[in-house]
Image 1 (cartoon, rainbow over the protein chains, first blue to last red):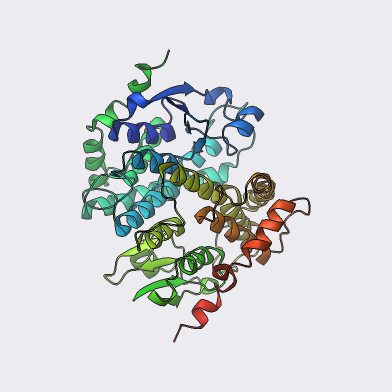
Image 2 (cartoon, rainbow over the protein chains, first blue to last red):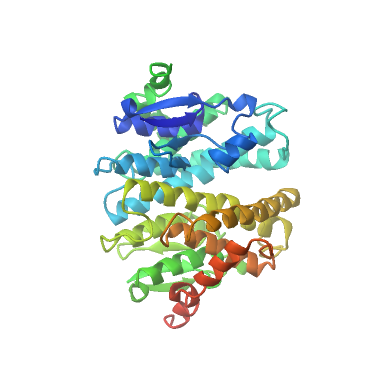
Length: 218
Length: 218
């Protein structure tokens, strides 16, 4: 069985949990909790043996191979059955999905993460040993602007990368999950983004992402 | 014919130019120069019509579809002939290549870019309208540490993501091109990284990446 090092309510872990749900792979993995508030993802051992970048989630295959980074894990999971649904089938789909996925990181999810770690108490003083508040606040403003950008995208099409659900939707969902945890509201005028997000929260993969592991750990 | 908006000597444009060379697609594209030192990638028109994130390269397909972000463009180009060589064939290859590609961005190329734009004159005062020098210097230190990390990787294997050349090598090459432009030397003790880079510079795709467009523009 594969193992995933994660933190059940984390926004990045949510991306992989949603991908697992979409691909119906829940029964193929077990989760191992890494307590971010205790800095377990920043210990010398974790950095040396699990993920140099000190983040979760990390997927560990049965042969011990480690795959970190949500996009990489999603590529792996989506390819397992030979029938990709999240990462694109044609060259054009792959290109557009990867573009919008990266844009969702740059302009929304990663920006909110920088805000959290640099301009709020973040994971607490023992973990946040360096903060740059000015950079954090600037990143927050970038994320709000990003919400307006994705609102415009979703006015014109049903999903973030076009006419079907993909990895790019998952990454925007991750951004809005993070925003929700931080009480950073989606601006009221972003109606298309709000209505897309309401639709997304109805998807079983999104709705059941946290309980997935509560059912399985132990 | 496809079009690529880029800046011939830029480190990110280099990633796509190398991918084009590896896939032997040079004759399928023409380049349009976006003068970064004039801020042409930050104009309201460029942001609204080419790339919201204000970066190059951007690939424009014959039907007008725009694909920004190097990883996305590489996914597109690599899939065109149905025989991917840069982005992986098996799930495991895809996962490892995307992980190492992202790590090369996070820990090296993007960190050097932040250093350039925030703690050096960058593209000049008219373009660099906001700088956070402390963040820039911290990013430089992260990149130096990243060089040591990739040195360790290349001590253990011939290429960044394993036993063959991939998109992840291209991204590390982009990082070292950027470091070279900024006179940020690879530490002398990083012998495996240095010897790998010497090998990479012998590849025609790497060697001919700039002249590719000089041959074709006009």
